[in-house]
Length: 335
Image (tube, rainbow, N blue to C red; front, side, top):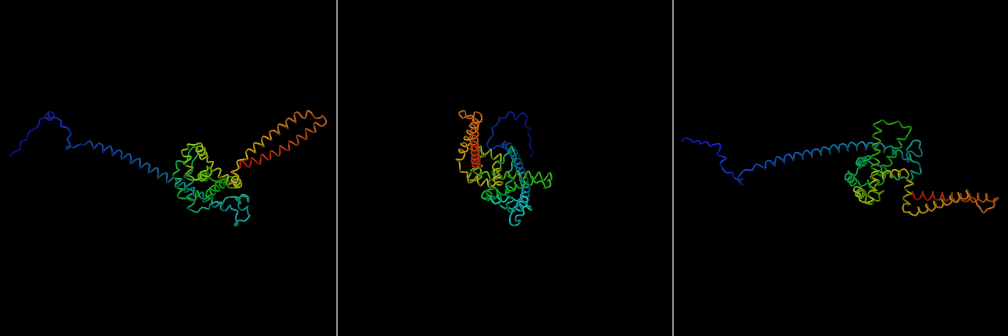
């Protein structure tokens, strides 16, 4: 009834033939792949966590800048509304140092008076549009398009652009005011940054019209994000130099010139008149020089001086009239 134990020599396994892995046998190589997959998944989770943290940090920064820009807009809006020479103040311009002259006021485009929600939208546009020299805001073109798609009045209401231009110009006037106490370092820093953001936002809203893009900002972005034509490169350069916004500021400061330019934008026949007048002036100057230097060789000595003086006077009067005509034609062409 006992159990017989038989010991196996240590060299016995080496005498047995090696069998191939049969389907029924266990294969532990798959666990190595699982270990690699776990490591890759940990790396992917870490990368996603870092991206999420960066997005949250960027969102917090954007919300902070939006709050600062909104306060800056609200402060300038109150001053801008007071600066209107309306019936509340009458003609007491000494009470309102920022009131525009009467002629400019009558030709200025009315600006949009934004409410609380509008100020938040404009502040977000300022933040998204802002870029410094050597940088670009086109990497955020999707966010800008999304903002404008949800708030169509940014493109459809020209008063929104006029409001940004008025605020920018008003802030510039306040900086140059001599009687105004100098702002603190932090306040001056905020004013400079918000004014630059305001210019970038004006550049964004004014860009489509200045570039001749009838389909709005989307068409402009398609043209300048990856420019492949000479016009695209030209518009991209103007966008980077913020020339669209600068032109809008100029139009807001001098609305009469903008109105005159819009009325005569289809007149392309003025430049040939300018060149014709310039050529006529050059000919007159050459003739005057010849008369003063050589005189009239066939005239009598007694009447030579009188004849030369009369001719010079006549040609000088003609030259003056020609110069006035050139100045008028050039003004029409440039405007």
